[in-house]
Image (cartoon, rainbow, N blue to C red):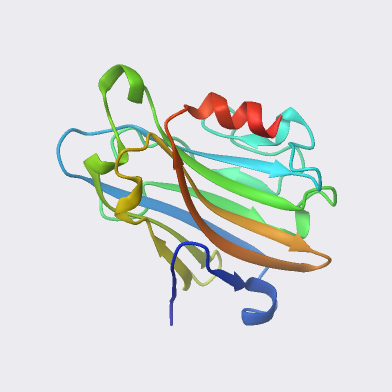
Length: 185
């Protein structure tokens, strides 16, 4: 049974799904008008809230973290299809011990040039599922409050000791992906 989260709610992965080591994060969306090119990015942060190293920024031009724990499956430029539009594999056992947070941001490529906003999407979501069984565990549907935004911090996976928690963030901005790089570098 899938747990549906609302903005700000958390799910303790370690307690609720003991033994889960390899998980997938699937991101999906449909268009209301024009096709948009959305890009999923992952920031692997240390206790200071910063990237532990610039190579721990995983995105369409850097598909794998140096520790091999996070693997972006590639950029879907059209968003066409019925399954996840982009996916990220995370091996929790392999995550560098200095990483405390894995933050997932979705941005609209060339949003400022094309005048694109998240309001041009429908049914945008992030879901977490077991990589081995494909069983969906958690899903968060992005709400309409981000309709005027060009990027959204969808979720965070946080580690405390040996436990991992998934939190639905849903915080949007209009500052571009570069603003997240500046925030987390």
